[in-house]
View 1: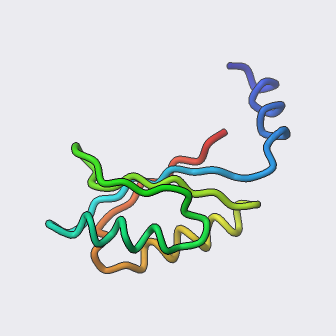
View 2: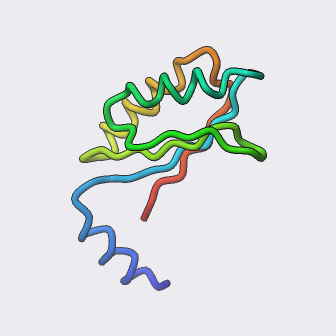
Length: 88
């Protein structure tokens, strides 16, 4: 995909979307999923098998709002590590 296509796609979106991959404390996956589902801007959250324990889809009108959601997620003491993937 060339830079022009990426710029075009980005300008067409009304919201900023991201996925956050989460490593939780052992046995806390369900608790973290329930916590995430209560946060505004979290569109979906699911426990998964593999390197990460939970995957969540986030959406907000801008990056600043998205950063606030991510900061709220990271405050949970059962969340040990996160990786955020912003959709282009």
